[in-house]
Length: 472
Image 1 (tube, one colour):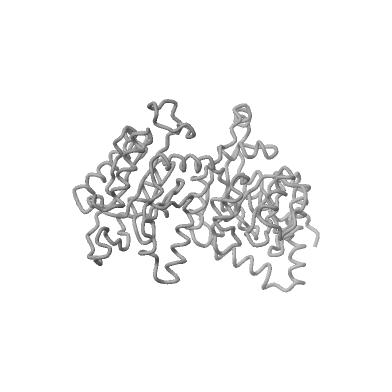
Image 2 (cartoon, rainbow, N blue to C red):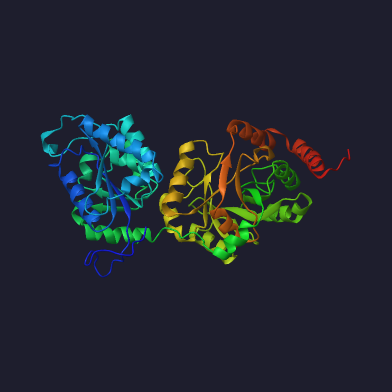
C-alpha cells in the first residue's frame, strides 16, 4: 500500500515513503502496561501509526467487557463492503486500534519473572479470533512479540498470511523443555522472515526492516495488452502436475493419460515425470489426437533440497544438482520455476530457508495437491504464496489416470510461458472430494502388486482402449 504524501520529516533520507498495514501481537494481557513488552508494543505501535502506517495491536485481555467490545467491532466490520479491512481505517494518524482477541486469567509465576505473566496454552477463542483476523484482514506485516509457543504470538504465526517479524525479549527463559517442543518451536519460528532483539527496536529501524522485507514480495506479471488479448480466449481447465510410465513410480501410458485428461474435461495438462522429460515430449507429440494441450515439464530431485518442477522446458535436467543450479537450468531453457507440494513433510520438500534462497526465481507455487495427506501442509503453501505474492497453481500429482480432475485450474487459454503466467494470475482453482486411499491403492496395485508380465499385458490393453484400437 503505497502513499504519495507524508508529514515532513517523517522518514529519514534513505527510507522511501511507503505505507504498510501492520499488526503487532503481544501474548500478554493488554492491561499489563507495566509489562515491559507491552510498553514497547504500545510505544512502537503509536509511533508507527503517527508516521502514516495503519496499525492494529492484537492482545489478550483480562476484561470481559473489552473482549465483548472487540467482538462487536468484528461483527460490524464483517457487514461492511471492505470487510475486516475496515478495522484499519483511521489507524494511521497516531492512534492504533487495540483489539482484545480473547480473555485470559492471571497465572501465578515465580518471583524472578514477576514483571511478566507466564503464558499457558492458547485458549480456543483466541486461536479462532486470530485465524479470522489474520486470514481476512489485508496486512503487510504481522509483528509478533515473544513468539515462543504456546502463546498468542506463536498462534499468530500459524495463521498469518503476511510477512512475519519476531521480537525476542528473554528467549532463554521460555525455550521448550522437551526435544519435541523444541522441534515444534523451530518449525513454527521458521515462518519468521526476520528476527530482532528487543534492544534493536525503534520505529525508524522497523521501517527500514519492513521496507527491505517488502521488496522480497513478487510483483505479478502485468501486461495490460496481453491481459486484454487473453480475455478474448476461451476458458480451459488445467492440471499442472502428473506422471506417466516414464516416471519410475507410475504405470500410466502416455496415451492412457491423454485419454483420461480428455474424458475429465481438461483442456491442458503439464506432464511432469520424475527426473525425465521423454514422457512429456511424447505426450506433446500425441496430444493433437486427443484435443489436449501439453506443457512439457519435469519434476527434478535436487541433491538435498527437495524437488522443483520446470515447466515449458525442452531438455532433460539431471537430478542431483543443488536447488540453485536446478533453478538456473530451468531459467536457461526459458522455462518457469514451479514449486510442488512445498510444505508436505511426507514428500521431498525444500526447507523454508531454501525456498527463501530461490524466492526471486520462483514463478509459481503449488498451493493445492490432493495427494498431500495432511491438509495443513496445503494451507501453509497458501499462506506462503500470499505473503510473498507468488502466483498460485495446483495439480493432481496423479500417478494413476483415475486421479486426473481431482483439482483443476480454470484459466484463459494460452500459448507459451508468458501468456500462461499472465493467465494463471487471474485463474480460479477448484477441487473436488477424492479418496487419497483409493488412488494410492491403485498406484500400489499398478506399480508393485502386479507381476511385471501382467503389467506389460495390461499396458497393451489400456493403450488400445485409449487409442480406439479394437484389435484382440
